[in-house]
Image (cartoon, rainbow, N blue to C red; front, side):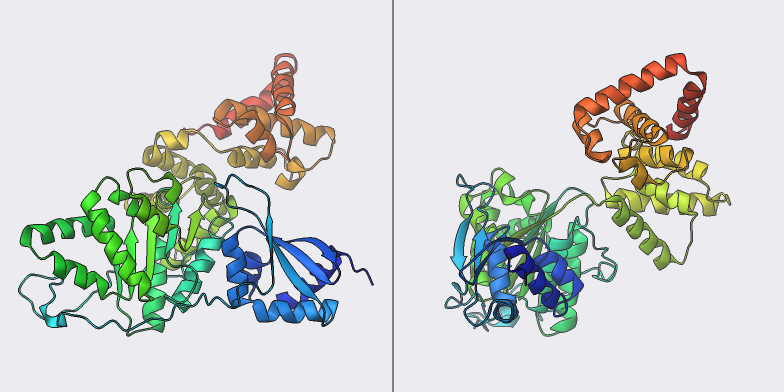
Length: 476
């Protein structure tokens, strides 16, 4: 029997895989790296201290069982934890299982007695004068987990959001801060968490509010001398979702009142969910005491979705609307609009409206015209992925072949042409272009571009290839 650390961990994973969901396995076990095995002690490397706490909190029993099965009753597990990126010490540190068992990470919800009767508190969401408090969640039912497409770009954020929805206020993710660029799904995910909590815990008070709305309500409360009512109202909430929290930047009094509301909710086991366009470390003009609290739980990022995820998003939207589009049109939209999901969905809606109103068939040419008008300058720069697709379609070869290490003449030529157009038609660096073409370095890309230029000057057939491809790549 092979008792190396890699073999032991592989055997452990086979058992774990049968006992957890595929999503949980990808999120919490795929990133683990076995480091060493000494004296029946297996050391595994995890990406962060938070990651370690989550494993301890949720999978400690399973981990103990698989370790004992593989290494016997004396078997133990140790974690090698990578220090956070902003730490000056990047050396991993080790903790032994079960180091955190004595310290409970659970924070059970506590019923808070109010010093003021509920009917006396002014609800900033209703017309003044109405006595009865009824809190509308402000959640959009269209933004559910069911239509939130999972991909590598959002897997951690979605998994942690789902964990919060199943146990609000009772996980290590409090607060849960979801951050990322415009149109990547932060608001969608925040609403989805709130909706799931409402479904599972109907008696919990869930409130979604934009940071600008919160700030305006606070200003109104100051003007009406009802600040205490404002604070008491927010302290009654079980799950508070604040969207675009970066807009608190520079608003000192708003930050101050939110700090006190945050502390009260957190101390009483209530769940706080925040969204932002940047991580806490990059937020400017924000009080340090508030930023430190944003870091208490988990900061999960939403990155730009990959091609497969973008296609899946479009297909999900089409299915939901009961429509069907040619595959080449769907692929074109996914290739052309590759940084903003909201913009991509908007382009799809515009295309459907154009086709319906003008009674035109939805073709690739119509999609090109519409995308040019819809996203203007952002669509004029095609993506490396789209260039590769067009080149591979033209030469009738699978895209995997282009990215492979094969040195067949026709594949090398197609790869060089793809590199040439990527350099010519995108703003990507030579290193980035090389990374998209099977991990080539910048010198290889530069050589490819020179080769294409030289061939185009001496070979008529080759020049015809380039002219044809350029027409296909140029958005008319």
